[in-house]
Length: 209
Image (cartoon, rainbow, N blue to C red; front, side, top):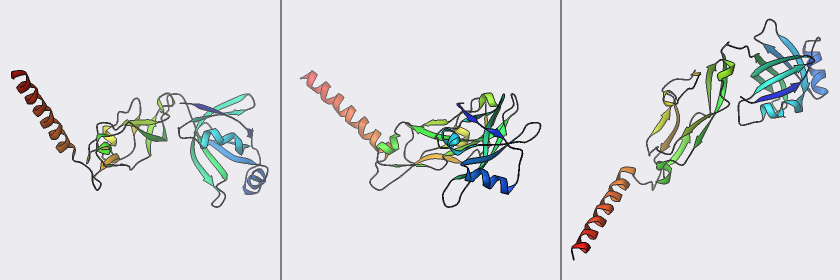
């Protein structure tokens, strides 16, 4: 998993009044849980850009002077109007200790169903997983090329390499739906087979003549 360095300052003054003061200065108040004790810190809002506004799941390397703490985002509070980051909760990554994280899901390829006029629908764009820090993926990719109209991929059909899914096993992640004017895969295959057979017969007749 990709790591993003966050140069931060440890906070001693806690509470809403001090948090508001930090925000006015362009900083974001944060806290890291999961270690021996919570670590309160702040960092400029721009420092979180590559960690938060990204299509991949990433971990943070929080630099507090001579101390470095690896962590993942657990929760973010945004301003309801401006979408500015108000507060971030982190979970510290400890070697060998499993953590839970929401991982983005991507698809690759063009499905047979879409080529025949069907419509691809992705129901889940993120999946919750549980893993040790060494096995946390930054994304999950599903190849959809062999999906026909009416077919789908469920959570329990996705290979989990070193981690486990926390979603319902039967939940549909991506599927191909019939749309108006879509061709039937089976009919198309039958037509191709018939055309191939007719072509072979024609070739045989021509050779006999």
